[in-house]
Length: 557
Figure 1 (tube, rainbow, N blue to C red):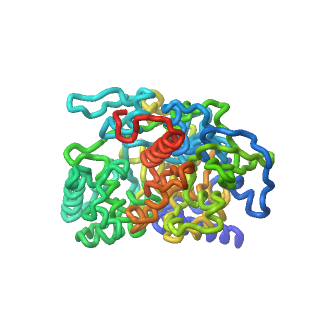
Figure 2: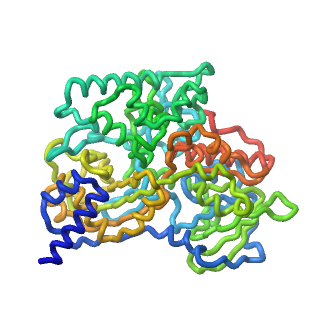
């Protein structure tokens, strides 16, 4: 009996620590026993390869395994965007190296007998314009289908998220949308209306040069102080300054910051918080279109990867040192085969380093001797993503199953349904739920330590305890759970970072032959930013190789 009590106390402590008191209480009310022994697997492995160098200096190869015009280090969205742009510019002598055994970075995906599913980002807001590299990519694989009479892009209905899109679980029932209108006071609704009106005005605002105050990607927006000064405040501070006191509105804003940035409103720049609500609409007609696939943004990664021939993509390759070739503008990339641990050396005329800044800081030999101060401004937050395979769609009370399903009283973000687009054809069949948890504490180092101290059993308990109050008999339906722990999932747009000097300084090339690409450089961990900076870096490569090419950054897609 004493052991059982200790187990229950330990389980409650775990739930309170990760999910919060309200969610823990709800889970415990549904049953004191621990969840049944559903097969649960930790599938994250890439950090193990990344940590191979912690204990001993690596051996160095003394001859070149390969010599190329351009080496792209990193096979995530930014690196693959660079390779895609280089292919479009006619450059074939390109090698992409990736430390993982699959490409995609935080946009990668998985698949089982039921469905494909995302391991990270799961949607792309439909662009408002046909200009730029993202619309070009969407047109290439048939998602952007044309323009309407007003010149706005049109999209393939199969890729636009079907109704119902969103619902919210609160105290025993599901409600439509993400704002809790049930029980809202007149003042709550008045504050929501005032907030929406301000967001519409900000979305329509332009500066003296005709640039939107908030644009996608952010480099195309205004850099006037009228707007960028908002970056010095937190979103929570801005809300207080504007007199927004409604707890329901505060929840919605905090959810938005946690959803897109993995940080609470108090740790998110007000500029970034407002960007979430303003950038993807014109202020006249809101963009209600979101593009998604069962594998989420893994579909975008797969389309980009088509530009890279199999012989030009080298997986399970850990680049650990980049140093300039003596008396040359070429670069050596010293690496290890992550499987065999064998050393190899690559040589390239041009390099695109498409890794997070914390990785770039360790790779460049010159930075080990003199670390640039701007690197200290980059903070990345951890996430956990779990995919649950169910024998049938979960039972719900209230508003029906939607694409995005959020739990009001939990610190998780709820889940998306991988089979949502096919539910009409298979309404009662098996499905995969992708559950998201941002480790949003202010101290990201402490959050990472907490993350990697967890076990598969911990996550089975957390995920099922989080979802069980909203879904009767859920444990009977869950067939398996797979868990991905991301130690450095996304850049945090903390106050002062997005429009600070550090982010701008980090974009500058080293000499004429080493260029940088990553969503970190945009300050927001979004596909649009990764794609834009990948294309920008590729165009710097083409210029360095003296290959003329019209820029894709603001051209018609």
